[in-house]
Length: 262
Image 1 (cartoon, one colour):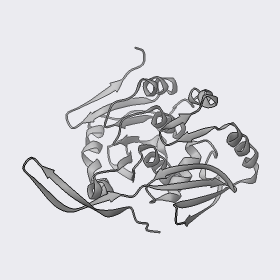
Image 2 (cartoon, rainbow, N blue to C red):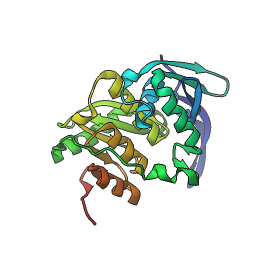
Image 3 (cartoon, rainbow, N blue to C red):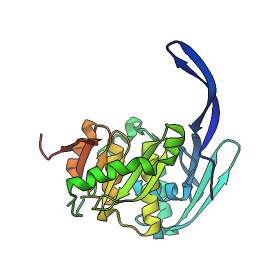
C-alpha cells in the first residue's frame, strides 16, 4: 500500500540581496500508535511509509517478539489524527507484554525517559557472534551508493536512511524516515519479512550514532554498524559490551572505527 510521504509547503528563499517565493516538499511526520494485542504500547512520530516493516522491526527491537513468525497479523488504519497500527502476536506472549507495559513509564523516539526506566538503559545486550569480515573498500562502496537509495530525502532534504549492505558493499535494502531510530526499525522489519539475515552484512545509517541504534543493531545480530556522524559515549560503551564493530564519521575519503579499550 502506497502512503503519502511528503507534501508541498509555501516557502521564501532568503538570499543576501533578495527573497524568492516558491514551494518546497517537506517530509510528513505523523503520530503512529502501536498496539499489541489491543494494548496501547507507544506513539511514535514517524513517516507513514513501510509501516508493516516498522511494526515488525519495532517489535523485534523492543524484544516483544523473537522472530516475525510470532507476529500473527498487522492491521493499519488511518485516522484524522494519525495512524493506528494493530499488531497481533502469539497469545503466550501476552503476559510478558503486560509486564513490560506496567514497568514502562514513558519512552520516545529519542530514548528512555523517567527514573523508573534507568535499568532499561543498562539491560544486557546480546553478544554479536556473527563474523565481521568487511573490507574497507566495501564500506566506501556502500557509502557512495547510499544517496541513490534515498528518494524521499532527495525530494525533501529532511529524512534519515538506514541501509543493509552485503559484505561486498552492495545495498540490499534501505528504508527512510524522519527519525533515525524509525528508519532502522523499518529496515530490521524489512529484512525479517523478506528472509534476509542481518548477520550476513552491515548496517549503514545517515545519522549520528546514539546508543539506541547500537542496541537495535546488536539485538538484530548485525556485526557492523556504520554511521555518517559521530557516536555518543554511551553508544561506544554499549557497542564494546556487545562486541559490535562500530564505524562512524563515514566520509568519502575516511572513516573512524572505535576499538576495544580506551
